Image (tube, rainbow, N blue to C red; front, side, top):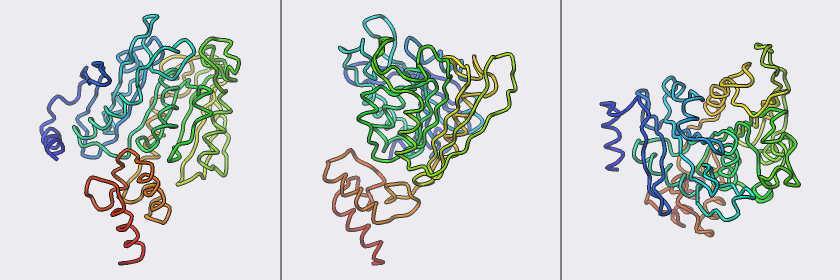
Length: 348
């Protein structure tokens, strides 16, 4: 409550807002760094967008080439750019289990979830509209978050991202998430068809079509719309074909922007110039942002019997605190919340 009040005061005076700031956050025995951009246009319950750099990249680098801060200014969301740790080869990374990272134990997911909770409290940000995007390794990491932390994130949008085989095999999100993938068919690092035999040394990973098929199935999408976008820039050697899997659970969709002859690129910054990946990512996140209510645990737009079962599962599994399940607002999720939701449904 104190933090929320203080954040509201900051919103009034716009202190330190409108410029990226390099911050530190202590987690897992490490002082982790991240750039935070809080635009002047922020308000209470604004969305939070995480942007993860690629292998060997940096938080500052992706912040500069993506131009997402400018999009945050126009749309009133907070952008956070975490910095990966350094591996034995001197390269920055987020831990998704690459084969040459067999000895790495850094808990990037724990770091990001803790940081998200801190930022939500410090700036009175939305508890639901939290999103993840990233380039290459950062996109791979976004898939890991979607599979294992779906109650924290509303949607993900990897760019040139892939799903490691182990992540694909174990992926069973508690809540289905909308997914956008932007990927070049000639990507020479994150291969379109995957690398099931680990020929390239990253570890086994599945192809883009297989990944999109998984998320379409997870979201139970009932229809698909195909389109070929106008080849606006004919000197970039590529054009864009879209596959939009629609009519999914709770209105979720899975979008694939297939860059024909595209490489390992962030479209709009380099490579394909027919689309701007950063604008598209925010368009996707904005479309699937939620207005939420306490008790609607599955984001269906109503409090129903399925929410009771999900709350019961959280209690039985001793899951992390989920504010949507805390129907009686006592800072804990227990049988009292079940009784309160049942009473609501029965009209008591």
